[in-house]
Image 1 (cartoon, rainbow, N blue to C red):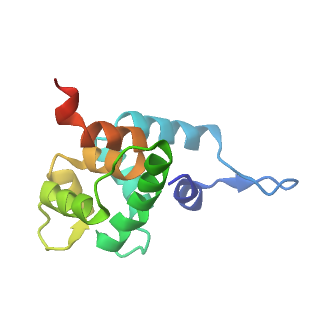
Image 2: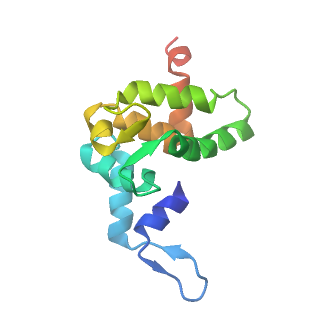
Length: 138
């Protein structure tokens, strides 16, 4: 996820170390988007990261691409995790896209679950909380 942030929003590279850096405005845009994932503006900001093929839509491959990192991180902590296919199906069910098997930016905004979908794909803690929401209510 962080690599995608710098691929799409990188502002410059440090000449000495070669590390990618972002300026203050880019950092603020990122923080505001992270804090307000459910807003259309944040969903649009993150869409640029999700649309890895620049086709205007995402599919099961893209969901798998992002969710693999979540699985890897959570498995290192030990909890059981839902399968990638189950999560992919759940995301498609949540979004209810106009075209089966692909999600567009409009679909993600229209479904009113865009922030939850983004959290599931970008944030391991948020995914764990979502996945365990029923057991945490007790």
